[in-house]
Structures are given as structure tokens and as C-alpha cells.
Image (cartoon, rainbow, N blue to C red):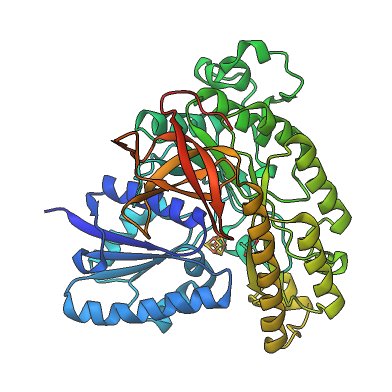
Length: 484
Ligand code: 5AD
Ligand code: SF4
């Protein structure tokens, strides 16, 4: 009987993607992934530290594990990810129920750590690495819809935004060998997936330099190798030590290697997003016309204190460039309200930026001070909780109106939609996404045949709300190459 592991993930997509690496390591070690803690011999919580609330949710969940342990003798509990990194041995001290603490760069050591746990000891490994990318590990897809998948292209972050805990929990930035990325995407195509999202904390600083004499295998997978006619493309950089592949090159490599698959990515950084990336997005129909570009604040002064490396004017210029290259491109953002020293005037600047840009969607947060960060060391968390709450409500209300405006502007348009599954609201309907990443609801059948997840359809958008679009199917595309 093989041992059973249940992995529960919190936080960003990167964490969900890491859980698939963890599953792969454990499957090789004889474990079988299961879908609930009750069935498992080992429960792993892959955790997030981004805001205090995220940590609080996990700490509550850890407490629940006490009850489960009382009912299930021999059950082991592990904490992975960002909280493991931030709280380290403290976690074992404070939460007796925890047997194992493993940081984001130490997942290869899980089998050894688990043998130790098997002998009744506690085990910890929170070493961060400058090299680890889990490059060649083939993830075991968990909770997959069989249509869309995530592929991590880089790890860590060197940006040091003043509010952010990530550089402390995920360490220095490093890029994965692009050839392993392309191979993983090709495998996804073979397995029937139709969309991949390339993940990194700051994809725009993806950079990989090959050894001076690349192997024939590597050559065959390089951007020039995939597309003969692009051999002399000025867009492909070459460094003295070998081939330099940046994020735009990587996008091109994946777009050419997987022409029937849609490509998305997350997350961009306004200070680093280049026009070369926009050119690539516009050039390839299978790269989705959607950019998540966190602004954080509309006030240059706040951006400066946040150490974001750009000001309002720079951000608005990047917006204009996106619209110049791809008028149809959708843009979403992250906003933090109530950062240290944020005045009413700063807040008004954020609202005015939202009105100017008109985002399709936004993730909006109250500032939560995180230990060790530059802001925690340098500034006071001085915006009162009720003011943060009121500003957040105003930001959310503004975004609601803007989302509704954007969605309404799509009515009457023809969009290509990838069907992902049956609508949660009604069995009669399916849901999918257009290139712009809006959710589109459509009827489950077309011309008497049932539409299946993984099918591309052309749709006329007939109605909208602030959150989704409703469409009528015009044509089933399926095997045709995707067009944006
Ligand atoms: N408080 C509130 N929100 C934060 N984010 C990151 N750190 C904090 C924090 N300390 C938000 C940012 C980031 C998103 C992933 O989470 O908006 O882009
Ligand atoms: Fe949370 Fe950031 Fe860690 Fe992702 S990288 S899990 S968002 S703290």
C-alpha cells in the first residue's frame, strides 16, 4: 500500500505550481496524491505570507490539524512555502502539531526529511538557493481541468519593494533553462492542454545565458532554431558567453513551439516591461492579449516610498505603449491602499489613475505591514484601519464601475473563447475565457452537439456584467490554429 499525501495550497499561482513540483518529488518517493486530508497519511500545507490575513488563515488550519491527528494515528503534518521560510523553527515550537517545515527551495530534500519524520523526529529545511529552479522536474498536475496549466519560468525576486515579503521568503531571482520550459510546454500540448500560463514574480527580468557552445539539442530548441526565417531577427539577443534569452525571446520560443496552444504570463513589472515583449505579443496570435501590470498606487510619492522604481508618468507611458502595440489588449492591476504615509491626496491620485487607465480587473488590498521588509524598518504603519477600510471601499467601487464599462464595450464583438468547464451557476452552461482573460458564459450545446472543455469557439458577446460576459456560439474552431 503506497502512502497517501494531501497537499493544500494557499496564496499565488506560483504556490499552486510549486505544489505540483512537490507532488512530483513525492510520487517518485512512493506517495499517491489524494483529494482530502481525511484520506491522507501526510498533509502538506503550502503557505503564503503576503499579508497578515493570509498567515492567519493558515495558522487556523494548522490548529484544525490537531483534531485530525487525534482521529488518525500516525498522520504527519508539514508546512511548506513562504510561511515555512519566514517562521522557520518557530513554527515547530509554536505549533506542536507540525512535524515538518520546508522552504520553497528545499523540496528536493523532502524524501530525506520525511524519513526523519518517519522515525518520530521533527525535520526542517529552509535553505534558500541561488540556483534551484526545479528545471527538469516534470510536475504532477493537481486539480487540473485538463485544459489550462501553469509553468514556472523563474523563481525569487530581486526587486525589494518596500512592502513585500517575497524577497525574504523566496530568495534571489533566477531564471529556468528555457529549453526545459519549452519541453514542458510541448508535453502539455501532447497531454491535450490548450493553454499555458508562464509564471514568475517578475517575468520581465527573465534572463538566461547559455554556455558558449550549446549542445545540438539546445540549438534545435533556440528561437532561431525553431524559426529559420527569424535567424537574423534583430529581436534575438546574443551575448559574449553564448546565447542570451530574455522574456520576449522565451515568449517567441513557446509561441512557435506550441502553435495550437494559448500562452499567457504573469506577472509583469512596470519598470521592466519592454516594448520588445509587446512586439512579440502583437506578432503571435496564440499569445493572449492580456497583461497584469500591478501599479500599487497612483501617487508618485507613494510609489517612491514603495521603492517601485517608476512614477505615475512612467506607468502611464507603459499603458500608452501597450495600447499602441495592441489596442485590443486587456489590462489588470494590483493596488495597495493605506501604505505608510498615504495622504488623502495620494488616495485621490490612485482613483484618478484608475479612471484614466480603465482596468478590466483589479486585485485591491489594504496595506499589511510585514516583518523585516524595508517599510517595516523605515516607516510607520500610520494610516488608521478605518481610513484604510474607507479608501479600499472607494477603490473597489471605482473598479466595479470601470470593469462594467470595459465588459460592456465588448458587447457586439466576436471573441475566441477556450472552454474550460461547466458553469458553476448552471449545468446548462459552459464557461471559458477570451484572449483578454474575461470569463465568458455560453450555452452547453451548439447545433445539437455538446461542447467539451478544451474546445475553441468563436462567440458573439451579447451581454455583460462587471464580472463576466455572455455569448452566443457562432462557430466551433477546435483544431484550427488559435487567433486572438
Ligand atoms: N500588504 C498588502 N498587499 C500586499 N501585496 C504585496 N505585499 C503586500 C502587503 N504587505 C499585494 C501587492 C502585490 C500582490 C501580489 O499583493 O499588490 O502585487
Ligand atoms: Fe504569497 Fe508571495 Fe509567497 Fe506567493 S510568493 S505564496 S503571494 S508570499
